Length: 76
Image 1 (cartoon, rainbow, N blue to C red):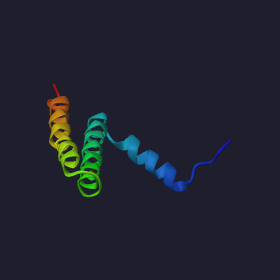
Image 2: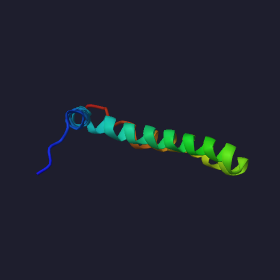
Image 3: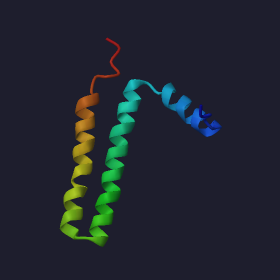
Image 4: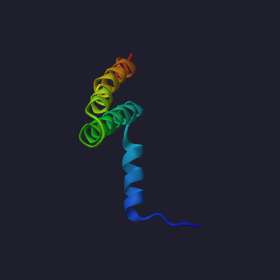
């Protein structure tokens, strides 16, 4: 039996306090941020065109998130 540390319990509690809407929103924001960091890394370390291509994913991810989440917080 493993015991969880205080920070693990605190993080689990914070995650469970989020509504499903905010969990999905956070996932889209994290994906866009990772794409941005990958884009900048590719731009400077590999090839500018590849970095630019990956950089175009950021607004695409945000647009997809908007389409998925639109109307989710409507109480109807």
